[in-house]
Image (tube, rainbow, N blue to C red; front, side, top):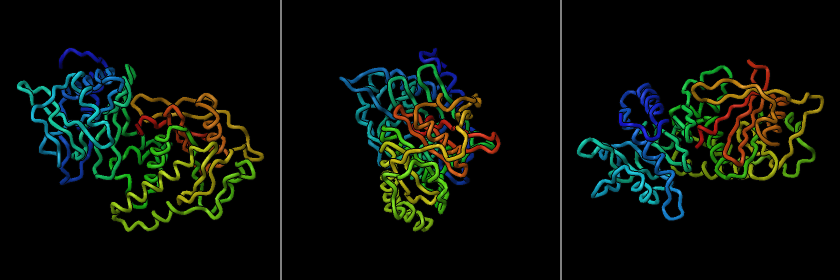
Length: 376
């Protein structure tokens, strides 16, 4: 291991190598090569220093994948490989800043040093990537087992703050189905998976950057209306079933056209959460209302304490007042779930934080799952 210039990369390299080595791979599946610890360190170290540079007035956005040339398809190959120097990475970053493009890294130098050999959209499953999000903010990910799946975050590094995703968090008794889905290595368009659709909704809500609340209530129930200020300005009659109809038409083998239609429907509903107030849908994905104001249910107590967890190694439950979580969106979501215990609430903040609120019978209170580390 070379002398460290970005010290947190040392600890992170060791933990990532251990996690990658422990993944269970379906028999017969060809996956990416697990980098050695020194190579993981070099990837993170180079990405960190590149993230602090500028090319003209632009901050580099770059995704570096540890992959061999023979493991990709339809790749652009450089005649002369590029060194993993921050200044060189900063110059080439503009070529791979679009979503789905990756700078391919592999040991090719005379002494086995890492070099960038090309650009590709096609990566083998469980291929390690290091992505620059903002200056000093990196996310380590692995590619999904299926092409349409979401890349799985395994670590988030922001300066000296390192969060390693705990793969066992989904097995906790208080875990929601959504959290379990976020931690699974599978296609996020899996047939009939409610939580996978909500995952796509969470990503889309976070992407529009305006903040928002999505309430998911039982189908056929009218109880949720008791927690809404009446009359609701944007109540939908009859419920809009565009997304639900797509899910009900799923034949079990999603086609590209079906996936594209799903993406458009999800973005359409997620866009409604940008309107001030809450968007309400059923667990069958039918739209009930948007821009609705959450109020305390008649006769219900004001929620005073919630338990907060984050699916990272070393994370411990914290008990706090709802006001400590954030602004009015978080207060409204906590009160709604406290009063409507068979519902869940997803809250995106303008700063990029994302929280899932659900009632925990184990704790006997509202449980807040902070999952923005999984969505970057």
